[in-house]
Amino acid sequence: MIRISSNFDSGNIQVVDAQSADDIKLSIVPDNEANFFQWFYFRLQGCKKQPCRLQILNASRAAFPDGWSGYQALASYDRENWFRVSTDYDGTQLVISHTPDYDSVYYAYFVPYSYERHLDLIARTQGMKHCRLLDLGESVEGRAIELLRMTNDQARDNKRNIWITARQHPGESMAECFMEGLLSRLGRIHDPLIESLLEKVVFYLVPNMNPDGTLHGHLRTNALGVNLNREWHEPNMERSPEVYFVLEAMKATGVDLFLDIHGDETLPYIFMLGCQANSNYSERLGSLEAQFKQAFLAASPEFQVEEGYELGRFGTETLKLASNQVGHRFDCLALTLEMPFKDNANLPDLTKGWSAERSNQLGQAILDPIHAVLGQLR
Ligand code: ZN
Image (cartoon, rainbow, N blue to C red; front, side, top):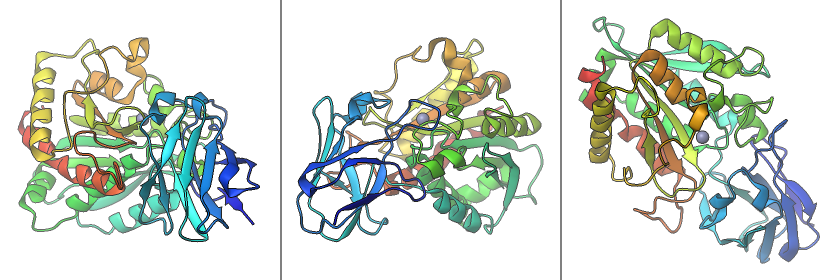
């Protein structure tokens, strides 16, 4: 018997028809109270060695239908090792064709980073040297908004305050893989770059801005269907406590550099967006941004500056976005980082595409440009 299920952490799928393996019909469930959908994650049982044809019927109505062209879905038997499988988009449906080697197989839009995995990350990070775990408040459904504060408390005062947030959009699970990499490098002892950073910087790291959306298998919103990255102009305790508590903590510490980590459904590149659209975007911030990007290019061959969004993409919504609002409010360098769901077209990997491992490595590499601009941040 064929069984398809998604009633687990970060799962998302609805079964329309699963009578025969070569004609399975599915649809992605929209975020609660919202029309956004694109994230899927489900388990298929009972199809060992059978050619399966999994059709996602509502693909063309997803948040970013352009994201499906050139996209290959991910599969895994053990939820550790994920690989790409043959996937086609005909303009209406997304069709995954795969013959599973085993009785149980998982499929997902990207490598899942579940809420349980997030809790594991927090649990092992809090034991790291120079790390403190702070609880900022609660999400809509009462999950902790967790902040990791990392600095060498023995070192001098007058440190720079660097904030990095990830996963406002819960479907962008690569953002938390990135944070995992960044944290693992910050935890390295006897690394002179890390020692130097922790003497001069207080890192404020929020690995998961949206725990409710993560658990529910949402693409873009919190439990109330609110897109957190449009709430930063006036976050609200009822609608968007996740942003409210983080912004209040930022006001208390000040911000000298802000990075907000995301994934992009459509573009097969790693790119960064600055705050050129902000009224206070000055020559100082422009040259800081250029210096940061130059150092990032030197630190990682994955990063590039040729491809990205066109200027003015967010129009009148600009100051509702985290990086623009924080850059404006604190007059600091503020950047959004986007990683692909598909692959990096400049360094393609036919087996895995863009992966959890590469996101992790990029998170480690980001500490180099941070170190490079440290002296000029204020
Ligand atoms: Zn995003």
